[in-house]
Each structure stands twice: as structure tokens, then as C-alpha cells.
Length: 430
Image (cartoon, rainbow, N blue to C red; front, side, top):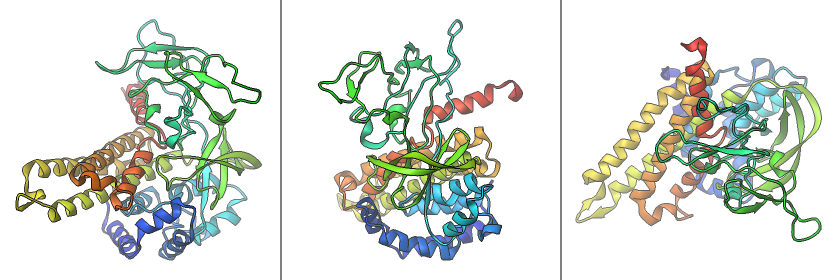
């Protein structure tokens, strides 16, 4: 699947609109909780039709498909536009389209208002087939609901009562602690340590009393790692939704949609990704399936972020001179930037094919490829910029953080690799 002329015209119109917007200043304001500029941009996007792209025509939208959404989100990613756009433009319309609430909510989204949603935990998938004799019924239990800086203080926990180490999928890979309890993974996460190929999944063993009455429980990994306080009892069970303080919040539990009651904010590695805990309010009815569409849009957004960072890196190496020449003329720099372009161009067909089919295998393959390509773009752009690249005032810095957040959002890379493997090894695929 490749974009058509109509798709390219849509992307060009959106690019022209965003090029006239200071998205760097808008992102800093959004991270600080100042939404006026961001909401003004949304009104302009609504005039273009982007906000209602996936909304059915009976509610005033365009009734477009996932491919058109991928085109839009690649462009939004290229300009690093903040906000709960995946949730508002794509996921919420899919989740509520068949419910009575849609008649009141979806026309407001078409007009440029925002909605956000916390989806239920992901199905547990073992990261690879267990060895003969192993009895693994549920796979690792992961709670990526506490993303962002939570990884650094240990708030991200994998819940379970019994864990054991399984060999990693390749030489040198760390052991994975496999829980025997039913578990789940929340799509809002963005933390690398939940990728169990990089760090052992942590499982709590029996609680130890805190230092005083009312202290939160302390968890310890069964592998002898550090002890961490969860900070909030029950926090690992909370669904997180981005920007719930400025958008209509919804919460999906099981197969039911609820209005969301906004709780406390959870820090993210990306300051502009403002996550809030939600608890259920009024039940609205059965939820439609928006997860695959959300993953495709996140993958397209990562693809756009990667291209945006490549653009910044190329502009920088043309302008910066060393030994009397632009540094972009040095072969080592050229090769690094060429590797990024190749990775992004290899990921693009996967993203658009996933948008066409929305098959689980295609969606997961696209997410992994786009995340890896964007992360390579981030690392390379930072390397060619040097210390300037992570200066907060410089545009690259906010893009680095956005990639770092979305790389593990909507399912970690290990989870998506496991889903691809599951699809490839299923009897029906042989």
C-alpha cells in the first residue's frame, strides 16, 4: 500500500497549515498546562477536516479510513504536534460510534473539541514459545499504566504472586520473569523497562509494612532487585489517558465504555504527554474496537517524528562547518543519515499496509518497525547535533522526548513482536 495523489495532497495541505504554526512554542505551552494556542490550532485542523476524518458522516465527519488517518498522523508527527490526537481523532470515534453518546460527542470532535480514552489492559502474550516442560499459562504480567518518570522511581510494577526466570530469546539477553497470574499491559505506557527483552519484568512478592500507619505498600522484585514504593495503593490498576483535564475523558473496562473521572496526574518522560489516572463513572455501553487503529496512528506519528528529526539533522550538518567544510560532507555523517532514511522508508510501507488491513500481525509489525526507525533517527540526530540537541530550547529536544515516550506506548515492542510471532506460528498460518 502506497499513498495516492489524494493522500499526498492531504498531507501537503496539512503540512502547509502546520508550517505556519510555531509548534515548538505551542508544545512548551501545552506541557505547562496552557492550552490556548493548541486549541486554536485544533480549530484550524477542524476547518481542514482533520478532526472529523474518522467520524462517520451521519455525525458530520468525513467517514474516512485508517489509511487517511495514517497520512494525517505522519504529517502531525513530522511537526511534533502535541495533544491526545490519536485518541480524539481515531480511537474515540471507533469506540463510541455505535453508542447513543456518539450523537452528542462526535459532532463536537468534528468541530475541534478533544476527547481522550484509557483502554483496557492488553492480552498477555508470552514473549516466545516456552521450552518443553514449561507450564506457562498466562505470560508476564505487566502494568505499563504508570509511564514516564515512573520507571525511574520504580512505580511501574508487574503484578503477580509467583515469578520464575526464563531464558532470553537470544545470547546475552537478560532473563524474563514470568508470572503465573493473569496479567495485562495498558496502552498508555511509554517506558522501555516494560520491554522484557531489555530488563526483567518486576513482580511484587508479599508486602512489607511501611514505616508508619498509612504508608503505601513496598514491593520487591523476586530477582533481588531494589525495593520500590508504589506511591499510591492500587495505582498499578489505574488506566491512564493523555490530557484528560482538557478533553472529554472516557474509560474502557473489559468491553464496556464508561465516562472517566479524572484523578491525579502521572509524570511522563515527555512533558507534553500529560497523563491522568481515570476511574469509571457512568456506563455508556459496549465499546467498539479502537486499539488496532490507535496503534497504526501511533506508528504513523512515530514515522513522521523520525522524518522531522532527519530534516533537522540534515539542515544542521549543512550549516555547521568543521575543518573548513560542512560536516555533512564527511562520509561517516552521510552514512549515518542514510541509514536513518533507509529505516524510515522501510517502515513506511508496513505502516500503510497495516492501515489498509488492520490485521493484528500487520499492525504490530508496523509499530515495531516505526518505533525502531524513529528511535534510530532520534539517536542519530542527537549525535550529529551534539550537546545542542538536548538543549530544552532547541526544537530537537522535544522530538527526542516524544519518540522516547511513544516508542513503548500502545504496547511495548516485545509485546508486538510476540503478537507477530503468535500470528506466524498459529496453525491457520502454516
